[in-house]
Length: 210
Image (tube, one colour):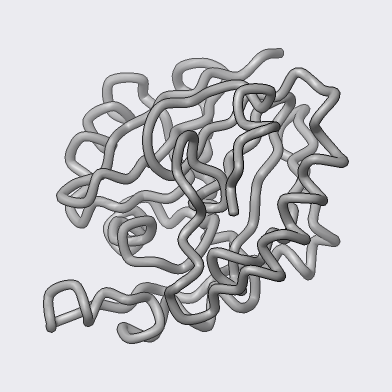
């Protein structure tokens, strides 16, 4: 069965969250909920009668994790991310929220480390693959579901990947982009990035990302 993907912009930072589901009244997956109150996201869930089973995080930065606590407390869904990401979302300096508003916040740690799943997770009839893509952050991952690749801030169309934040690395990013290119350059892959609209991989294959 095919999946549906709903992009819900986060606020006040213009990043993206995504809801992945198969049909109404079923469990769903949320990727990178970056709005503190999650009102728009929760309204969508209630309208479709969806119950979040997992929260996937592509990396630790506050504009991708701000809604984690609200969703965890409302739905008791499981947080899935890399070990490095889990260690940083519980630190307001490392998740960068302290530098955004001088107050900061922390979230619950991960319930599931992708490293412990051998970078794969079975969900309904789908095999989800987690791909370590260090560069924007040491904790960064991409998530493959069918032909959909959720890249966080590793690939954003018409934008160079930010590597100046703590944990960023140009050399690691080059390795990660090479890995993705080797895996997907000849495939029909739809990219859903952490900012902006979705696009096809072929549209950025020759983009100078660094």
